[in-house]
Amino acid sequence: MTDAVIKGGGELVSVYAREADLLQAFTKRFPKARVAKSEEEILEDNTIQLVASASIPVERAPLGIRVMLSGKDFMADKPGIVTLSQFKEVKKVQKKTNRIYSIMYSERLGNPASYKADELIQAGAVGKVVQTIGLGPHRMNPKTRPEWFFDPAKAGGILCDIGSHQCDQFLHYTKSGQAEVALSQIGNFNMAGYPQYQDFGDMIVRSPHATGYIRIDWFTPDGLATWGDGRIFILGTEGYIEMRKYIDITGRKGGNHLFLVNHKETKYYDCTGVYMPYGEQLVSDIVNRTETAMTQHHCFLATELALTAQKKAYKLTA
Image (tube, rainbow, N blue to C red; front, side, top):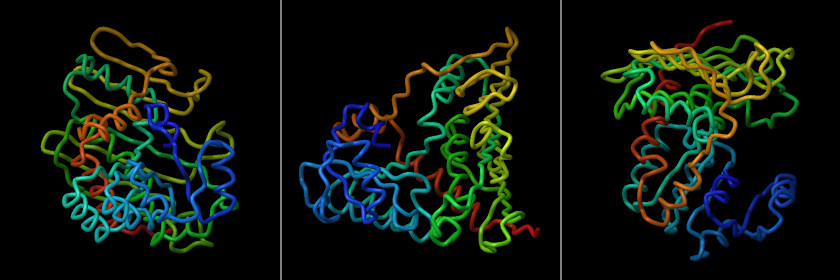
């Protein structure tokens, strides 16, 4: 998040963290950042225009509200909001203050293959997009995770958390300004030591002109050379796109792979060098009060879908 804003023209001013180890890691990476003694020191600094946070998920919305009320814009890691009651309050304050509440859906905004897919769709390479399938497998290593990670009340649950990435991509690639959750399910199949945790979830979403299937899990096997084989399928009336964002198990090195099939060709794209404009667009939006990086409506709708799916999910039994 910080890298994206700096590359977009922003200047990192200061950092505050309660956790000494996290603060040390951040200042090692960004040594020019001034260490603030309190949250208030940052909120009361009138020279600061944007506050970014990847704090414990349940704390992000309350912080974002305080940030907006202080006259600043806010950028949260996903999930940017973890309950529907938080969502209602965030929307209320955002409307009142007219500040930006941005959520970094990094699986799209921070991945070059996602932008290449945009380019191809806009060029008409697959015709009208009618469906997306988003697969978000992750590797579980409980020893590296803090205790709050396993508590849905603090982390939001699997569909609220990782599912928000996929909801964002469904809305974006299908150009849907309205959508609903048709079905959702969650389960805990392999984490008996954490009975409230969810290591599997899926959902079906739809808009008036498109549909999407989303599956999230924590079952990436140790034999895979990365944390997860994240894949997006975009089906159009004239062709389809598959993105393998993090690994190509057929042997191509690295990530950022995209495959296009249409009436003219079957083609592979290495998207590693594709420019990602999110940081630059967000900085411009902050300065010019525009919505080029992401509209506020889109940001909130992606989160609302994920929150609704989480709340209404059928609980599968192991």
